[in-house]
Amino acid sequence: MDAREIVFILFGSVFMLSTVMYSAEYFTTRLERFLFPRKYVLQTALKKISKSLGAISSFRDLKEIVLVDIVKTLQVRGGAIVFQYENDTEIIDEGEIDTTEIKEMIRSSTWLHHPIYTCIEINRHEEYASYLVITSNKANTLLGKEEVQWLHLITSYLEVSLENVHLIRKLTAKMQLLAAQLPDEQSAQDIQWFRKIMFELQEEERLRIAADLHDTTMQDLFFLKRRFVALLDKYAMNKEDKEHLNNIINFVEMINNSLRQSCFELNPFLLKEIGLIETVRTYLDKEAYHTPFEIEFKEEGASSIESKDLTTKRHIFRIIQELLNNAKKHSQASKVSFAMTVKDHRFCLTYEDDGVGFDSTQVPRMEIGASGMGVEQMRGRILHLNGKLECDSRRGAGVKFFITIPVREVMSV
Image (cartoon, rainbow, N blue to C red; front, side):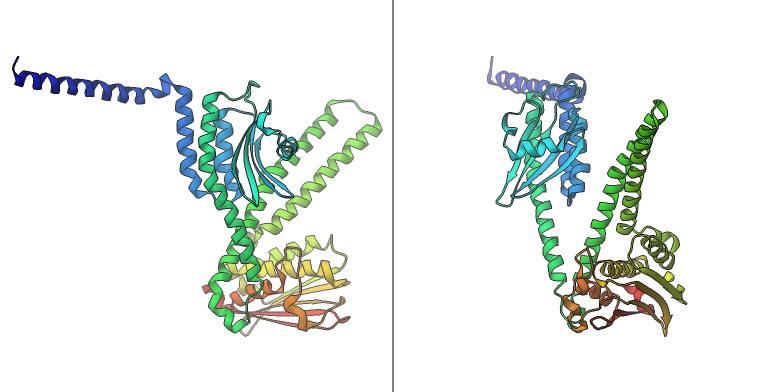
């Protein structure tokens, strides 16, 4: 056998071996979902989750992007991401999982060898530690070795995302603190972009909370009420038990109504449907049932504000909310009045109460409501709309706020 034959046989063998190996890999990949279905499901879910992790910017995203897919993929009863701070524990959960038990487990460090839960530490810092907790599967057995390894891969991706969420929250808190210390009107014009970002972040957070309340708590209360009503219809009860159950049903409905009002305050969807004036009227009418003072609302020729953009109307609504919150918290008034007018191409909002008043020279330092915005942030909204805020108050003589916004200019904000 000469050298040419040897070279031909060698290259031919290498080619045949490469072809066989490539074909085996190709067909194994193509048939993986049938040959190794569990492995295929885990790999597909891992690719999906890792691809989506870059979009996470809040705790709500963590639940929708990560937890839902993990619980569904592993076919477990529930899962949770736990943040353990020095004096507090925060839990994002999905499915059937006892959050009270989880808190105690993390606090007492019994998660290392727990007989029911699979718990993996994600990251640990001076400020907090985070954990991924998964329940047993629906057959009441713990996760297998392959599934635990898959979870460890998930947590390695999660570590970066959780740190980003934590940093975003810290940055937002610092920005809110800075927003409350903005300079005077003239120099503040140079940082309008900052105000715009702050207001957008606040609205995004309000919408997130409103959606969470509507999609979880309110739905749970709705089904709870239905179960109580079904019990009332199904079983024969004495008069005392029926009355007791009816009281519980009424209490659940009262909680649901309160949450519905909170959702509306967080997300005033009626602004788009019926406009600013009617939304304010509806809001103040509802608040009148819960305030210790009389509320009066007047509107005269202000309908031109309805042609302006939704963002502007939302700013005005938030200002009214903060004024009313302040009245409930501080004014001790018997009557509070709001008035809207448009004069000389300027939208005018007037607030007046007959309460205890304050020294108007201290307005910039005054707290104006439960949201913690302060007068500085209310002024920030007004300045953002190129408007002006004037205050007239003396101790024991009530409060008057005069807010004016140029109608022609609000289209550009």
